[in-house]
Image 1 (spheres, helix red, strand yellow):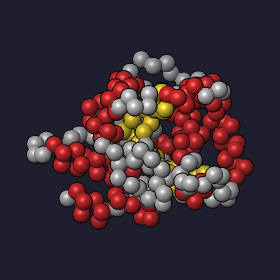
Image 2 (cartoon, helix red, strand yellow):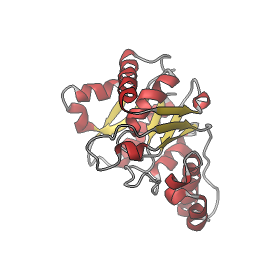
Image 3 (cartoon, helix red, strand yellow):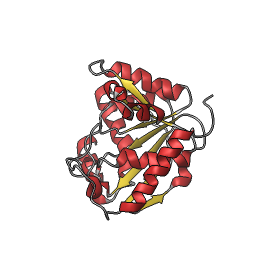
Length: 229
């Protein structure tokens, strides 16, 4: 079983980030009572801005009271000081060009060991702040690991520090909204590719329902029915 409690460096990082956020914005927290206190957990979150990972580190990780793991580029972990800080905050390195299989094995091992893993299923930041098509790797990981999934929506971060912006824009308010945990199961029978698409739509539906209409993007109710129904 993983060691209980949050190590010093993630606690320090969260405190520093919260102080920084308080200086430039206001962050509302909702649904944090839904965070499971123990056991394996796959955190999925929309990716609307440069600030999303920082918000998870500042508010969600301290609320969990245990470390959260992430997958990152191995070369970034070799950067002086910053690389050390990334490792201390739970980032695991994946070699560039190593392929998705290595990343998948590493991610599944984190969950098999009863730890927390955070994933942005879209794979990249949205240029508009609205949901984009999710990569299917997150769906396969969720189904094969059997780990409970915790959906999180970050609202308004695209106005604070959107993709392509070098610096944040102070004063834009944001919300971190946590939904209820769920278990994802792949539909049985029929075409495997279609089942995977349907399961991915179901995965993202839990995030989309936490977002305002303008941020639901391709997973708005009508879009889901038209694309996957």
